[in-house]
Image (cartoon, rainbow, N blue to C red; front, top):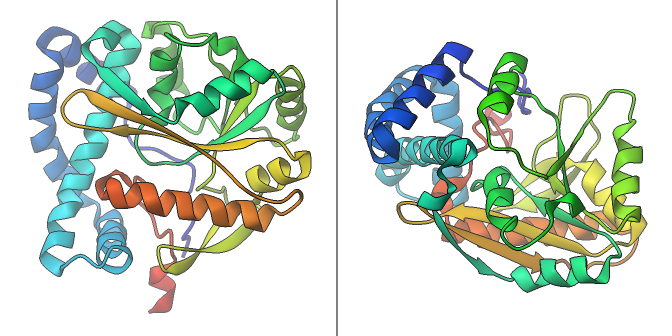
Amino acid sequence: MATEWEGKSRGTLLGYKIYIFFLRNFGIGASYFILRFVIFYYVLFSPKSNRDIYAYFRKRHRFSRWKSFLNIYRSYYTFGQTLTDKVAISIGQRNKFTYTHDGIEHIDNLLQKNQGGILISGHIGNFEISHYFLEDRYSLSKISMVTTMAEHENIQEYMEQISDKSHLKFIVVKDDMSHIFEIHKAIDEGGLVVFTGDRYMPGSKVLNEDFLGTEASFPMGPYLLASRLNMPVLFVYFMKGEKRHYDLYARTAEFKARDAQGLLREYTQSMEWILKKYPLQWFNYYDFWKDREEK
């Protein structure tokens, strides 16, 4: 049984077009309202995801059975809101959202030094849209995001056609490993490279570390690269707050050169800290801790 993320997301091109039509014509609030009913579909017809997210709340956070069960719906709904926000902001509704920041001076310092650096986030909150807010402050030509581009290709093409253009650069992970040269080039030019540090593709090398009380596997690449380059590393999160507000967090990683395991340990501790503040925003809806294998 596969327990790792398979690199696939749900949704069809027609579904995206209908939802974006509704969003544009009826607004964000109405979209949130419709979302409440759409989420029932996922609760009813996603038994594996339900089981995995229930285990996250019950075993990792030690919530009661009833609270863990209710949080399945609340988590899906929060995730749906972040996807709605992502679309709304990308099609020109950025002015309808606000954000505050905690630790953004660490990003300022790295860009001012022009020495390059690595940012590590995760599949929590909504860091994918942070560049629409950060471009008010920075030239995003200095920031690159490493991505698998695992979304359906036709949906990607459609979103690129209708989205506001951003100067954020994307480095796509390729089988021939050519993305490694792009990463080094971006860093050598004094840029910041953003990784997500909590998912690995099947067959990838991993590191294991205690996370929320149980050992879990993480992609080796970001931690090995950052520790070998001995570059400054920040842990960054863009978390959904009340209504149409977001909170940016940036924290400096303290680790020894060539100590990938130590850097991963710092990351898991940082993730534990942010998830205690925002437990509903863990969006890895698969058997992350391999709980099913215990049975």
